[in-house]
Length: 232
Image (cartoon, rainbow, N blue to C red; front, top):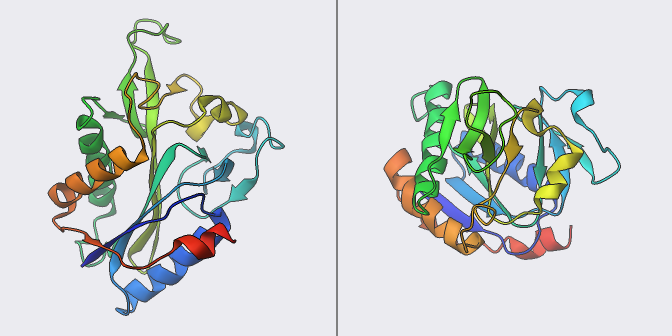
């Protein structure tokens, strides 16, 4: 069973990390089910294990959280759907590359529900959209903006952290960092692309695509996670 959990309001980042680590250990020991946890964070920057100090342009703008997920600097904030993915990769074939590709397919399939074509590029982590309406910073190439970030960690073959999709965040908040260390391309969101959608719409699309990619139908959680995190 894969438990599907949605938290309302803004979830404290460090509290979320502690919860994920505890849940990942429980999954590894067989005392808890796998789960997908959908949250929204207050404005913050997180630094993955490959983050470079020069990519933190404005360290005073928002709280900065070093974290042990893969990747570089990223932004989380209101209007962005973060999907934490706590799955037993060991029981799912122990193929980390395949697992990351599944996460990419999950995001791309979700975007497709809104007629947005997401793409992945060699050497650039995350999911991108082409922007022929924008001026290119690279001669001869169609501009591309990042719409979703991917960064995971494995502990005892159980994944945590996950993906984030820009639904309607304040895109100016990304200017305090070099997102994922990539200067040549920008960032976008579903609303920036002209789509009148909200987090609830994206949640439905994520759930609809999950079984197609991972082979499991998620079960709605009865666990109320809202209160502990709002008070954190």
